[in-house]
Length: 236
Image (cartoon, rainbow, N blue to C red; front, top):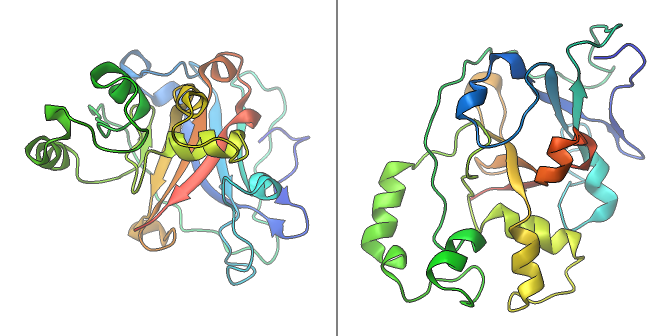
């Protein structure tokens, strides 16, 4: 990381665990649907609760917990960088090198963008009267992509309801109902930056075999304002 940057900490709780680093130069940028930098490294950190036996939890609806998940970007032309040791008292996860591959993704029919195409005005997060909501089609979607996995860009594979709705509710401070068009509009303004599944090889378990998600607004991504990325997590 840049030599003058500090290890991310959730004040009052402790240092964040290092989850993953993404070398942007190694990604197939032409196949991505998000505007990532052509080079540089993205670092993902999360307060996983291991240091306090899960007493403090990072959740999107709690603004005070937002600093418990962080994305740091180190530009390729950063002049002075330094390798950082894990802070004392924080057990690092085992290192597990990964490679990337191009993959098509799909999302739920009740995702705001899909719903707006097939059933504008239908209640957010619910099935509606269209073949894309039929059980046959849903079963086909599940067979197409039944594994959450690790992912950069594309449609998030939500374990529960679309993660974009969770982020929108958090940003709007839970003050709009699911029938409010403002919630749908806000949810449609976020794209997936990265998701990280539970990973046996790295001894990572997010809740009950859950996943971590970082989302960002396209305009913040274009300006490389990764500190504005929002975080949520889901599990079974």
